[in-house]
Length: 227
Image 1 (cartoon, rainbow, N blue to C red):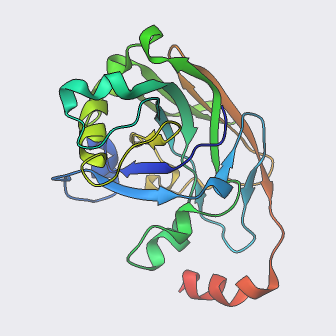
Image 2: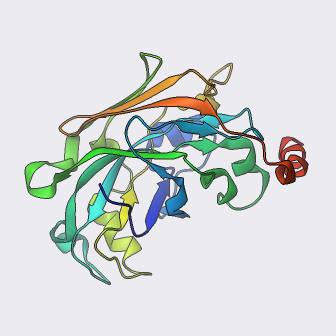
Image 3: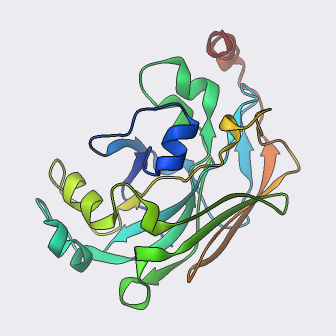
């Protein structure tokens, strides 16, 4: 798919993920933004920042907007969808948790694989698709999209209440339970690993893991994030 115009992500949108992270159930969709510089394609390497050892996978369903709209009702939402894709919302957990905002931990370069294709909306029913994430061939996440707390129409209604959705915008709908941060011991990504996210009817998004180079200016902040 072409580079998305904007990337709007949803957090804490599966009940099992909410529980495993020790959070209260959300009363409205929790959203954050990603930069286009985070986006990579299938088979491209996910870069582990040299400033972190706490990099996590998050398999998710992506929704690509095809028709612009503001104040879109949930009943009309599907008319605005171009199609569906797969995303791996890779999180740099120590940087994500250090402050009050998710922005740094969700916006390192080359940490958002998307693909391998966009399936047209009229060819796929989003309501009960099987989602599976595999780490080096082992299944670590398994869910169906009917387990979303806020479903696709509700997300479009909510997001379009505060911004005009435009063609090419990408909504990433949230990850199910099984993330590495919630495991004992934690399962962090490391160089040489391979992560695959498969969603029924869309395909498999596969990416190897490599180590990024350490920018000298970031060394101070890596120590702060680790405190």
